[in-house]
Amino acid sequence: MNGSGFTVPPALASLRDQAVERWRAFAPRERLAIGAALALIGVYLVWAIAVQPAWRTLREAPAQLDRLDAQLQQMQRLAAESKTLRGTAPVSPGQAAVALKSATERLGEQGRIVMQGDRATLTLTGVQGDALRAWLSEARSAAHARALDVQLTRSKQGYAGSVVVSLGGGS
Image (cartoon, rainbow, N blue to C red; front, side, top):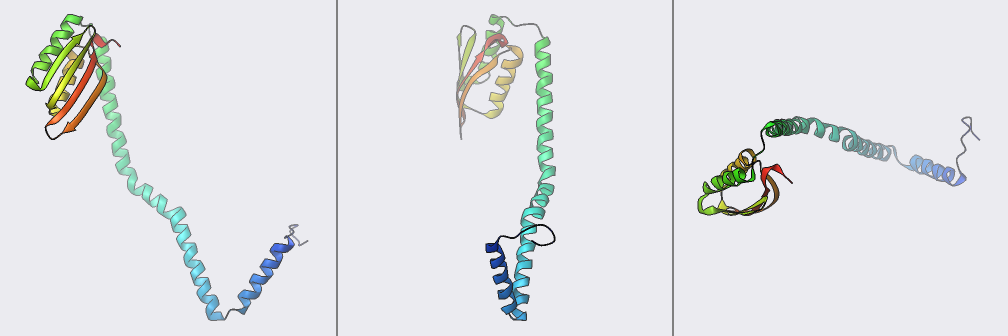
């Protein structure tokens, strides 16, 4: 037992002794080369484990903060809009249907709406993104409609597919 109270198992002690003998057998020039290689490996490990991840985080943090700030502002706008919509008077199913039909007429031949009780299905063929966004905005504000199911595909001509909405903000 040595002074620290730690006993090295005999197999490890034997390996350590062999390594020390081998190290002493190397010429000074070989020891220098091996030491330099080990130092280089150590520097690389410190770089790969400690410095590079921190540097990457510092480099990417401002862009990520900007994205998160934009998402927060979007969520705050949607929350304010939701609060405004909750405070407005309910829309009757008849008024909601008229508002949806009016919004759909602005789409022209590219949009067709079918009313089914408290739901409406908009079928689209080649609608541009701005026109679809305007329709959804008008459906939400004027008819208090809420999208239940959206199945759209995008092509060179625009969006095609269907949007199912619930009238009067119901579920």
